[in-house]
Amino acid sequence: MSVFPFIVGAYASLPEGRERQETYYRMLADLEWVSGIEIPYPGDLAENWQWLLECLPQHWEASTITAIPGTMVTIGKNPRFGLASADPEGRRAALEFTERIREVVLRMADKRGATVISRVQVHSGPTGEAHADAYLDSLGELSEREWAGARIVTEHCDAPREGRKPEKGFLEIDDEISIASHTGTGIHINWGRSCLEERDPSAPLRHVEAAARAHVLEGVLLSGAGPEATQYGYEWIDGHLPATSDEPTSLMTLERIGEAARAARDGGAAYLGAKICVPARASLEERIAMIARIHDAAR
Image (cartoon, rainbow, N blue to C red; front, side, top):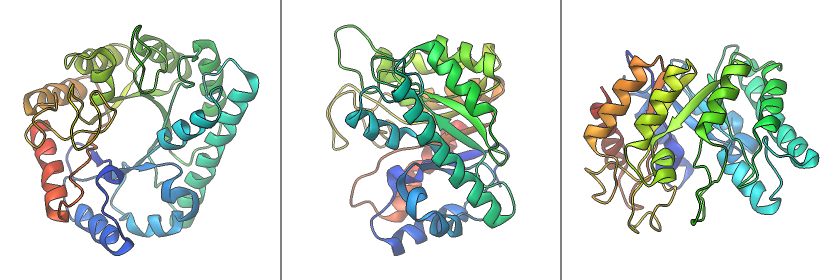
């Protein structure tokens, strides 16, 4: 097992087909430096959590859940939805959504007889209408619930900026850090989301250091971003670009990976990780090699 926990956002690089997916999970489990995966909700957690649990080896102790897929789908249907919504119905709906995640966390722990999920990443939506006081109330409520050993962490996404359409458009990092301090929760930094917020590859390091100074830095996930359209999407997409070594337009260089990783470890983070998209026709070995290059740069 890795000396410092390292998780893989495997869903971003997951191949098609159950057989290949099971093989991919086994290959990740065989790597001594992988300590868990980041699991999207709803994804397989909503209907196939027992199958997914069977894919998670016993020695993985750092797996996380991210609520961002379901959060964004629901915001698309209901723009008032969010844990930071000033609209009572929108906030209530987000709390109920998060409760469904908690129920899956409890079922998985009960089935295995041990903690399976170490952290649950929640988000301060809705887009362009997030309110710090509402988010403070929501995290206060969530923190009082039983999570079978998992900690609540806020995954910072891009905050609104004048003159451009946001990818997520949630709270400012300073507000989220303050709320984490008040609620005893943590902050999870995604390198690419911090980079695209400011259109600046130095922004992720600033965010890592700010959370570390406040003693709320929980983890850093290394995921790229860039100013040009690629096979992964339009310019400045929240598209989990690989490192520059595998996607030249990505601003996430190996040097910047190492810089962020050192700041995370020095700042008290509990884990590092990588989440990248890969070419559609990449072999399983090629997918893992691209992730391994990020891990190696982060050591």
